[in-house]
Amino acid sequence: MASASCAFGRPAWLASPLAATLAALFVQLPAAAQDPEREVLPEQRHALAFVSPTGLAPLGGKMLFSAFHIASGQELWVTDGSSAGTTLLKDIRPGFRGAFPTGQTAFKGHVYMTATDGESGLELWRTDGTAAGTSRVVDLRPGEEGAMPSELTVFGDALYFVADDGRTGFQLWKTSGTADTTVRVSSIDAGPRAVARQLTVAGRRLFFTATTREHGHELWVTDGTPAGTRRVKDIRPGPEDAGIQALTAMGDHIYFTAHDGTHGTELWKSDGTEGGTRIVKDLRPGESPSRPSHLVAIGRTLYFAADDGVHGTELWKSDGTDSGTTLVKDIRAGSGGSISSPLTTMNGRVYFAATDGASGAELWRSDGTATGTVQVKDIAPGAKSGSPARFAVIGSRLWFSANGGSATGVEPWISDGSPAGTRAVADVAAGPRNALPLGFRALGDAVLFAADDGRGNERLWRRSKDGRVTLVGAPLKERLR
Image (cartoon, rainbow, N blue to C red; front, side, top):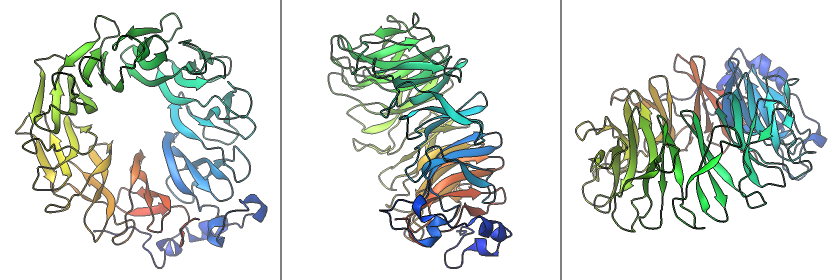
């Protein structure tokens, strides 16, 4: 297995052309800029000693992300994939407390997010990738509490989100990017307990779930106007919740799981009308639930995991009809169940982690037929589990984390769907330590991801086209306390 370029011991960056550039960036930060209650090592004051990169969002050939630095707290950063081209974009909340940007979502040449400047609470912000172009969009709830925008979702020509203005509870809002164009779409049971969530686009409709005192938490739909925002159906009649989860678009329909009070939690679908909202199939007849999960669509076929009470949690597929909803394969014969991860799709196939009872949890793929449902590779040979997880599809490759054994731990892997094309990318956290990679995103012909450096620091890494894996930022010899 190839080791990452910044092998431990003498860091590789010291011998690289970037050394002089990085050395210039390693300024000592004023002691007053850091949390006085936090123990800080000198290396942690380096300008590029950021940790915990999250929410990678591409913008204009660069990648924006949120990260923590001892001087600025959790703030917004930008990178071109190199250490020299990585910098704090803007200290939105000056000082060490941080703005906590989250939910980064690209929309019309900007990246939108939730953040706080310390004077207003968590509100909607946006950036064009420059410090000058980073600003708050609107202060929906003046004061320290903030509107706490979440679930940022592009639908049509607007950005939709859920927020609480302090008067109407968590309602559906939309914006075109300015305060003047930011308006509330819904007024569902307005009050402090109002809750809207699970925004999901299907065709020309935006589905979501919302709570009313009369009907509980049920399925709603909107065309983007207050008049076109309505409850689809009271799936579980009365004030009790239908427990709707896993909203997944397939064409113009939305598929989800729900409990109507008669059947257990089963697979449902909706075309946005009351009459067109129904249970697809009672996989486990009666009140016992089959608990469908990990819903994904390929064309006109929905794949999911479910337990019919006979086979355990296995792979199923559906075309939206009762007769067209069938078990794909009983991978682990009997009632034990096989599937242990979410499903993801690549090149017309479904990929997931499963065990057949002989091997542990390993990488499998399916074309929707029993014969075409096969193990891709026994990553940890024998009864041990490779436990592939955190899947991301980049081009024609599946990226994921997996445990290759006690010699390497959990590291980044890549697969083209064949045994020979499934391999470890690098031993980022050298030896048996776990890198636990996640958040794989493409940037040009490279792939960026977050992973532990082997010392307990989650850092940003770059895998270039030539296969080299390098640290983006300054190396840390100790865990950031």
